[in-house]
Length: 121
Image 1: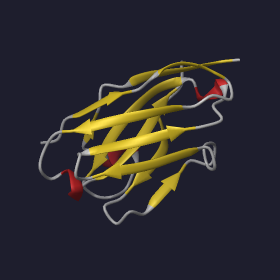
Image 2: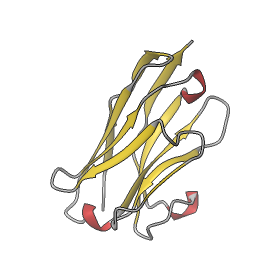
Image 3: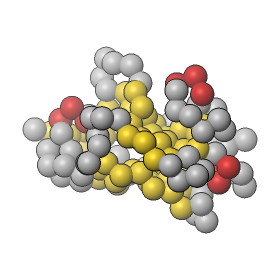
Image 4: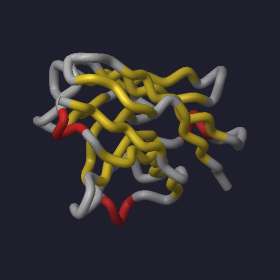
């Protein structure tokens, strides 16, 4: 069992930065691929970034070059550094863990409760 708790969301102006954190419980955290999804208002949840246990990372095209995912297995924490934020990045951001190492919605085993990110223009 893995529990995920996000923090770091908030209100920021366009062009600004935020860093999200996701603290995980459980001693098997390092064996999970971890990632971030987001759900904009009125839209479906979408993949943002993922980091497998092999440290292979992937990003949605919309955030490449602006967002960086990283993990600290010693602290059981995964981060999402978000730079050059745009109003269209406004969403609830969710941390996710996958035993399979892939990030299709159906592959996610555990979700966090979400943290709101709002980018003003």
